[in-house]
Amino acid sequence: MMKDFKNKTAVLTGAGSGFGLECARIGARLGMNLVLADVQQDALDKAVAEVAASGVQVVGLRVDVSKAAQVEALGAATLERFGAPHLVFNNAGVSAGGLIWESTASDWEWVMGVNLMGVAHGIRVFTPMMLAAAAKDPDYRGHIVNTASMAGLVSQPNTGIYNATKHAVVTVTETLYQDLALVTDQIGSSVLCPYFVPTGIVQSQRNRPGEPKADATLTQSQRISQAMGEKAVNSGKVSAAEVAQKVFDAVAANQFYIYSHPKVLAAVQTRMEDILQGRNPSDPFAQRPELGASLRQALRA
Image 1 (cartoon, one colour):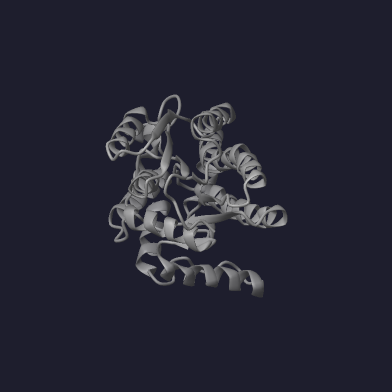
Image 2 (image 1 turned 90 degrees about the horizontal axis):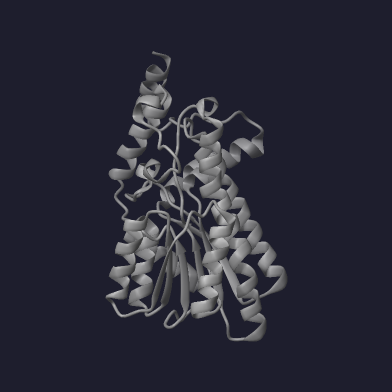
């Protein structure tokens, strides 16, 4: 497990806002070398300037994590400047909602590309360099953290693509944990499963390649999903900074599952019991029936 972060190197995607930016701030306070990647140039520039001002070494690269070649370039730049990283945080993510059959092929491509393939490219590019560093140095310790969501552990309605990608990230990271354990004791992994936390994710359409979807082109269910998501995220009581601290604590403790809102695990338990007992999926609005009623009414209007 990684106990000492000073002079170690961290690579963070989605570093221009949210959990990525807050983890960069903690990394800077701990004296780490930082490689920051984000698709939004102005946010990235701001983040780089902020952490550089604290005196740490930092590299910033504009990266669309859905593009294999761009993540490979990020890996090459990291290796050239700092050598193999010690902490890799595959964090970049986007959100999209609506009834699952209303999602277009390009919606699927975009969300799967960033949320799932971004993580896959990060694992594919950085794990071999970390393993090579571990083989050379018995004192090397590394850790890979992938951002999933509580949406990776339950299946809430009206957020189908997002759920699909986040469930995939959970199983990919669990498999990574098991695969690493087969070949090394020097590299760990964790999956971050946040619930509603104020970050920039509800505005992720701003960074969609090509023409971002105009509100006018959204279906009724997509508009409802967006509005509900914005309300839930913006009223979140746990801050991105608190979650970032949980990430560093988990890395230091070699803790795999990282939760921002452990109370929500009751819904995960209900889902697991549905599966184990072979019963139909439980009503996701059992605790808040008025929310379910209003959503059904809006969608059937």
